[in-house]
Amino acid sequence: MEEAARRGAVCQVEDDQAPGTGLAGRDCRAEDRGTTQPRADEHIATLGWFTRNRFFPLREGSTWKEETAAIRKIEIGQDILAPFGNLPLVQIDKVMLQTHLNALAKKLSAGRVQHARFYMKAIFEEAIDQDFVQKNPARELILPRELRPVDKTTLTWDQLRLVLASVPLRDRILLTLDMTETFRPSELFALRWSGFDMDARTLTVSQTASKGKLRNHGTTKQSLRTVHLPEGLANELWLWKQECPDQAPAAFIFPNSRKRNRAKKNGFIRTDNYRARVLKKLAQELGLAKLNFQVLRRTMATLAQTKGGVKDVQGVLGHSRADTTVNVYMQQIEAGVKQTLDAIYSELTTPEMRPRL
Image: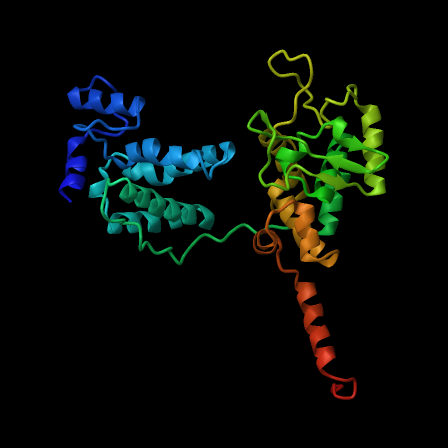
């Protein structure tokens, strides 16, 4: 306890205090910028310092991919470090964390609140392992009951057909391909002509695009894959290729209409730009509650329940686990529930047993 208290008392300056604002400030920031190994006579024990210098590096080296790390750092920074980052670890208690978690539940999504609770626990567990604190104040945090409902928007077949009928050729083929194969946008916009095999009617995802960069990996192990193309869709892609000015194997199937930074060739489309310029406007024009790539994937997973089994839908979506397909993407179809109930009753009874009114 004396050691933990000493760690908390050594540095009382704000976590983001600039260098040169006093001896303590200079010492703290110098250590924050340099090695993550404190000297024997000096310890930074604020939650912000510990998280950035002792927790993030461990996650980045093991469980977080590059894009995951970027998202998690932003969320942790906003949801945990913003209110507590300047406080010494030993001064943060269970009541403070539970009160904050309750406040988060009133303004953030259920998933975001769950992440905040998970990482509060994880950060303090790591602090215990590294002898910065002796107890985890987040260990018994209770997830608030009143959480914002998770968005479960889905579209109907008629609405999907309306979307396809309302866009120009490039977007119609792009969205038809996305709806059929349920590509993630990072997979869709990285597709190249080298991956299109007209004879075999297949399309191969060999890279993904995210935040302006191409990557040789995807969200899951199944992201980089070869998919089957229905005959009509393969024909549409072949015809689209004839319309494209650049049909080279390395060219993107759906290139950006503008060259960036004086590039010689058109690069790939950015997801956020397409969402804002095309999908959001379409939703407004067509009176749809919501239209983005997540809605399209959820819609196709839901509607595909009547077209194939769970393992089939899992393969279409490129999920590593079937429970993700079932619990996150598939939504209940009321008509399907009624048909199932009718079928159960029919199996339990004979026509003579069923009363007629």
